[in-house]
Length: 333
Ligand SMILES: [Zn+2]
Figure 1 (cartoon, rainbow, N blue to C red):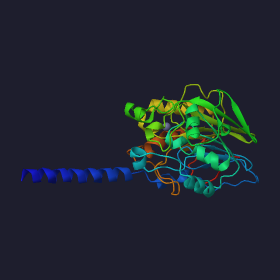
Figure 2 (cartoon, rainbow, N blue to C red):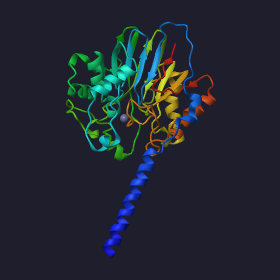
Figure 3 (spheres, rainbow, N blue to C red):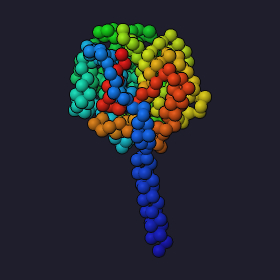
Figure 4 (spheres, protein in one colour):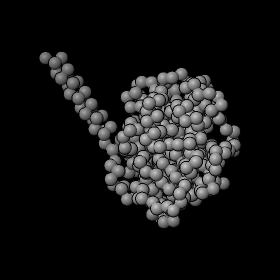
């Protein structure tokens, strides 16, 4: 009798736990609340404007029609279950479909902002399919080598080195990853490096941070900064000016107000950006073929993550905040 009761009690607890988990991973902020910030149609008389696309996480494509530059190039987006319990590798079919869906053409470079899987996983496959070069840390280079990308398509820049692609000049500026809990730090190897060519498929733990970068993309029509890692290195951007900043907001809402203001001061204010485009707010376990949606609140609460940036543009009306969906093309100039 007692045994039966214990079994029943355990079963009830188990069911409740499953229901709680199912609720939590589906409880997310609806984007409809922020509809006013989503891109309204822009007019241009320029036949070849400088454009930007945001394709989820920190994947951004900047193009002048003749040359395109991409950060990250993350499309495989493994499910949460695979990410946490399985092994991951690029899916060439998903990469091919995604590049075609977003009409990515003339890609010269793909630049992971750091080597975590949600940034660097697919960069070597994107490079294989497009002929672009991968530019990144030595850890990113080891991911690319492990996926069989030839050495002449892999560049590890020295500090301050810049690259010319068509009319673009690209520079990687050493930055800092968001500070996370000791548990997450251990799980995702923050401050650690990948020292050997990666063996694919690889578990989450293998994708160590390997150093983080801001990517400065200069063009005669305007400068763009992609700053995706939600952390800052003080003074790193003091000599940088960028009209448009793509800024990572993941987990910003879980920081204290002072840290949030410091982040904004060292990025948006420092480069004097006129247009602020939040990135890294979408759930990176959602397939690339689906519309972007916010993280489950339990992972990162979009309302709290975006609030300091909305407050900033309200106090600084010379700046605008624009949200992009993956079907939008933003005209920079
Ligand atoms: Zn990361």
